[in-house]
Image (tube, rainbow, N blue to C red; front, side, top):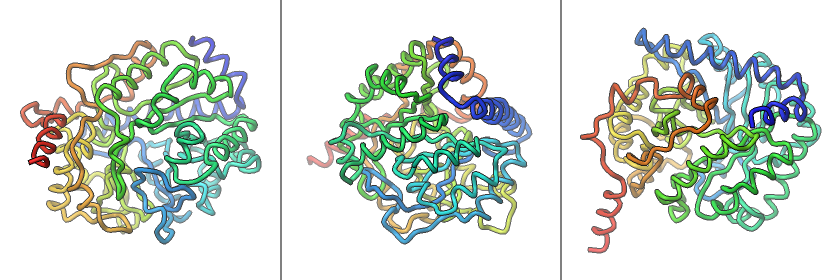
Length: 421
């Protein structure tokens, strides 16, 4: 399987782009994690990977979206983006996730990529704005991998994404990226309406046949102004996705990413471990994209190094979350986020200004943390990589206390019983 994967990389992508990714994302990415570990030992903090939502606007209206895509457009301008990237590079970072809204609606996005050819960008996109011209430009820069979201069949995609003919436009963008031999990924927010269509071997085989080099399965999180909780996966369905990811990694010549488990199958949250934090389209520094609360901004007159190292809000978020669950705090313990916001007078970083009310209305439910049902990695390569580069960095061993853990299934049952009374 590994030889087939290596052969695919060597024959199906631009070799210059492949070498760039191997050096910038691979070697330098591992070095950034190593520096992160050294900082932690010194009692310092700066996340080795940053995600930036460069714009709030989007051409789609997806179910469960937490971004104010219909609000007045706000974007991180080129100078601010370049300054943020430069300060992160000075700390050893070499990889950045670019989100939106739809990132390619940012009129100067290409200027950001062009100005920072010494680092690597992963762009979360619906693919609708990737033409052959755009893909050719990305190939020239050599430092961008588009991660194109596919949310189901034609009918399901239209329903999930709030527009007609969504899948066809997405596939056109995907094909344009592949024609230009970019390193391309496909991601899916797995929910009840698409799990049967996309969490299966036939779909992965189709991606491999097309030339897609990696896929990423996210778990749908019922958040935002219209959370659509009926789409959320059950505990059994989440285990099904995890087992599928583990099996596919060991049997298919395609990279499969997940962000919620270590090598032994223990659940974790990248934001709680400090592996990554997020910068919103207004410049606010948030724990992660779906937690829209902040006390600091990239626009503050303060070096980013000091901001991350001294933020009481982010530090408390990491510690409080790690004390209470290894899973997703917004799904399992939204009450903790409300308390944290009150403690630090954290501001709502949305245009709608209703985040606290939304958190108070969240019904706690099971996330990736399912004690006793851990599914360890089968692949020795993934096991090694996660053991070194993607683990909890001791966060849970320092903080997690089973006495604090509140089973979300029991909490949901209690809440439903109370509602019936």
